[in-house]
Image (cartoon, rainbow over all chains, first blue to last red; front, side):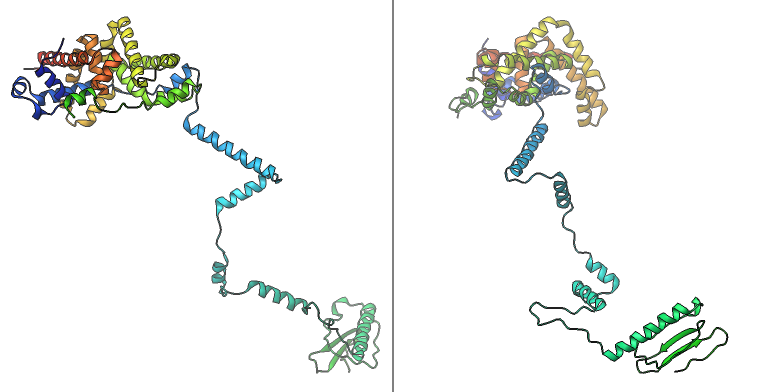
Length: 237
Length: 205
């Protein structure tokens, strides 16, 4: 059943294969292109299915080929690349260290942390540009009385102690040892012995006496207090 | 280019099938490549089948059958034609066979599907039109159209669905249905006029 020219023209206008302006008078009298266009649009809308379910999984299951989705494929590919790392490390003789790798991973993930010192310095009122290492070294040297020694120096400095001072210190120490070994009142025994030269010509005390040797300055006289058990006695020089 | 040239496709270079590579991959043993083809055409095939049988459940099953059958017979597919054209032919044939077996249920199932609250068609209409009375009127028109489509001869219905749902050119429809282009045009023309007549009969005065 073939179409007449007017029918063919109407069909082509409906399907957008011919413009309305191309229609002749006979065709324009035979039909209304606007009504046809509206009708066609309504039919197309009515024919459209309510939903479009996905059937791909069912189809692939039925043909016996369950292919992982694209995301799974990507993950699989990623795993393969990870194994390449292990192979390379083995080839270059570096055993893979899970702990180290984890640590590196954490460091990478955590990123670089800015120094906390500026904040601390501001809090304690210190200078941000201060040389902490230098300060620490200086404190240690001062406490230990260390004299830095350079390579190639002639000789280490020696501590020189005068012989007379050594005799005096030795005598004082012997006196203190003797006194403490013979004393009985522990609470009132020597409380302080100042440093400095001590010149003791003769000293006799009882076995139950307590002796205190004092020197309140480098040039101050040495005071020796002797406390008898029976009666308090002021010291004598 | 004249109108006839546009219609017939004269003077235009042949369009290469974008699916040829994937089809060849499947034929070479890569069954996974078939997934790409299914994903590409599942929606369109479902529309065609649904247009024919108008039952969501049946359309889903038939669309699956279509892809499974195509996979099983892919070695018979000639790359001279488009894969989708070949696929669509399978879908149409399956739908025709199904309608022959299940003639009695197509219209009733369609009405049931469209009357359900889940019917996306109703939702779609509601979202587009704020006036409830317009929605009801539109829904009635659609129901009448579909009832009229059901009264069309199968050959006219096939052409109408392929043209209106898929916007296929006459030539491609002729390849799918294996009929001359002139026959495609005449079936389409008379299908539309028949629908207009049927709807005019139901149009309220």
